[in-house]
Image (cartoon, rainbow, N blue to C red; front, side, top):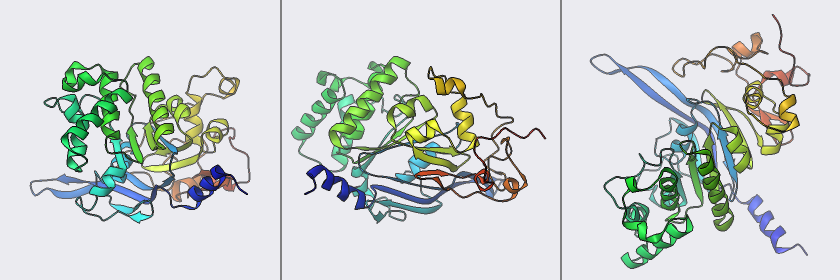
Length: 348
């Protein structure tokens, strides 16, 4: 007879993903002229697909401006998607109104990048953390006060500081407030939008360890958005690499860092300082040029303007994100040539 843990794992595998995103797009219109006519579109997110299961952490990485934060805000419906499908536990929520989304807000919360700008300076810290409880009508005032005090203790803050204001906390303490606020209504998924990028390195480690402890305790799933591969390697179980609105590679953490299958990922990893022998032996890749504008992205592969392996096919045909190795997806035509990656870049 199978063990209870094995049965639970089998049920979790067959259950629908907690978050299932397919072909997600978010385009922002550009208005010009006296009549504010639409003169173009910013293709911030251009066909992104991924799944996150209960208790899993998907790290979403890429350069600034690639659309990572827009993905996070769009899957939570803080921004309305231009196209694609968003499913929460098998339920399509793509076209739900803000009122109809309210029950799903309890299941999905967000930790913002700036731990000060995301906190209301006119509200006491306890009121900030407990605001979601009031909005969702959770408990009596006394019960809400007790839960806020417990949340303060759980994230490493003294309960008596519930009556202080945001400016009275340090940067790390403000981010702990943000975490407590996200936990208040008992979510299943938390979108972490660069939650440690504004903090000192020593504080970063404390916040990451706190998030991992909370994940183990409550079975949380994370969409962890970051430009720092070292941070993602520490916390993520799965990693998706974005470039100019698209996911170009996605696999488990070990496979991505040991054997990247996309030239952009290889370039990112070559720039990460690491004491390991594999990192020292990796040849440094210097990308030429700048990231193209999302207003007028290149045809074909978005990365071909900077890729040392680009061919005429790359400039004309968009590569699909497909399974190159078991469980390892990459969007690159190089894998159709029957050669091993990485190659020696062509000299031309």
